Image (cartoon, rainbow, N blue to C red):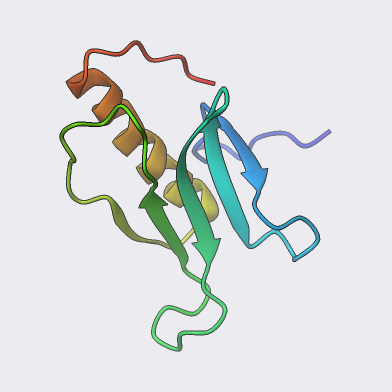
Length: 101
């Protein structure tokens, strides 16, 4: 069993490997069956090598988009945090309850 590292962000939602078997470099975030974001490890770009790209994905009920909806973080956990915070801001601004998983 793996214990959390102190001060490391603990994701609230479910994250699934987008392409299983490819080295844990690409994940999608889910609230139940609704996908809301994605994080990917940059293994190609010299200026961003080893950083995690995060982006919000299309959610059908969103009528008003919020920026920024993508960016870069140094760890996968921080990229998860950015996507989850963005998603919760969308939930709040559209009068939807937070489920947290």
